Image (cartoon, rainbow, N blue to C red):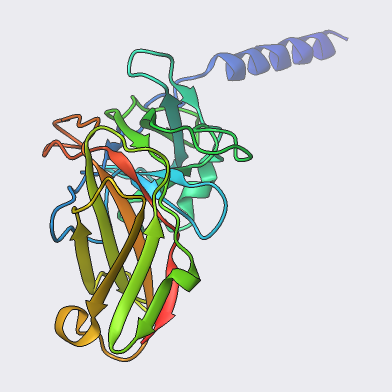
Length: 272
């Protein structure tokens, strides 16, 4: 009987010791992510765009794409959490992404997320001139969350309207027509037309349209031989709206003070 009492007492002491022994618990969070530097639009912009930007998608609502890097990737990295706010001083709320969804490619140089939900309900027309702020944290397997990254914002504007029937190859020319009937925002610079080979993601030709911005219907004809100089093949075309409104300079993610506002049309395919 005495042996049984001693054994129970020893077991309770062992259990208590296990509960109190937290010396090996991981309490060190990962390093804070760093948002990828934004590239500015120019007469011959970098492509594809990097940093925060619009992602039009093949269908449905457009979204805002955020890209970041983790300076040192820990072995126990579990994923990331993306936060959004309507102003830099308001509360940042998690977008609810599954942290593990960012780790499909563990060797990726940059990670990214696309916010399609917090900008506006998907059933509604995009809110004209809606600006969102973002930051990102890293999480490890023990649940430790890093400090937030720097913050960056983007102002989403309505896209121009373009369809397959408005892109025509005729008489050795590329004819492109689009409409923009949402009202002109302050700071509108113009529209950028991109042509990209279907098999690659690098621009082979672009043209910046700045004239006649007060009109609502744009139609341009470019020579395939003298201006575009395209080889026969399949291509994609997109028209971006370029807006200087909302320029915010940040020492980390936007050191050049790029314009953080605009929109993109969907991709239109054509064959030359």
